[in-house]
Figure 1: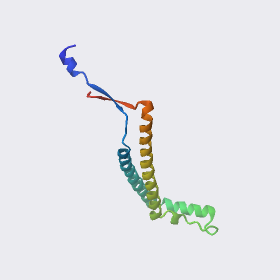
Figure 2: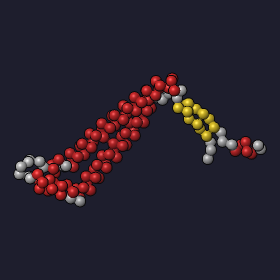
Figure 3: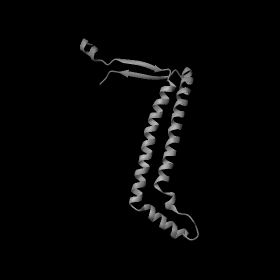
Figure 4: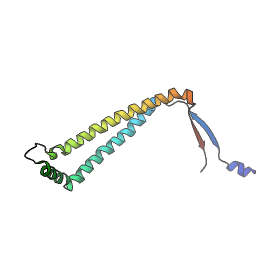
Length: 130
């Protein structure tokens, strides 16, 4: 091998992840879960708007009234599908998702730290290849 070939060969470093900071994992998981929660609420709002604009809710309500009969039941689909109620449920689901993802990610980081003594950790190979 010439000096040029040796100089061009990529350098590699093998590292082992033997500990993950649970607090860092909690912060990162919280931020990612918050982003997913915001996307969830916005997506539900847009979906509700599209379905309301196209008249799906009214058509569905009329169909239910024809099948079941509006006089026999006091069920009003449109009152259950109000925007404030749908967004409220989406916000509650997003809040639960944020809390659960943050707690579970922290728990998994702690479990990884406990199991690393048996497994040796995760091997990461770093290279300067282009």
